[in-house]
Length: 111
Length: 111
Image 1 (spheres, each protein chain N blue to C red):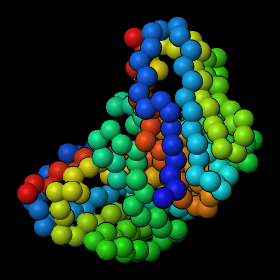
Image 2: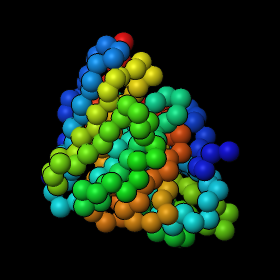
Image 3: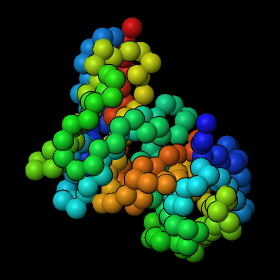
């Protein structure tokens, strides 16, 4: 079993839809939770960063962490075609420590 | 606009040749990571440094891979000899606090 599990998709939604992306993890020592967006042939771009449990909102993006369930989510409101990319969850035991990545979910937002 | 830079962006080589990839971290970041991305394995840590000292290289095949930080502005990853199974995208990331910022990657194809 991988330390971080993520549904690879692809996930196809119409423009304007709310998108929910999720990861589960097994190591309770993980404390830092991040979401990266990766466009084709580009490097991962940091979207959201959360320490410990709770919610964090940034514009159309909301990240949620439930440490009791070992479950993290990213919500995208009013999705746009420009949101079409692969979304990677990434988790770490501590600041400036190595990240363990999910396999990534490929999202396609249809105009 | 501070960003991680990597060279070369693309590299095609023949099996048995030496490959050197270079990374310039964001100025002031003291932690540098090397990751490898493949379709089958996703993003995996190869090695990382803090203040130029290696902290973890357990993800790296020791017989052919080597990573160094000659100075604070340059990290290198070498493969000698290269093999077709090394074909992947190699990312460098740097971190000053809790989050990591990725470079554009070096796309390596070993024939």
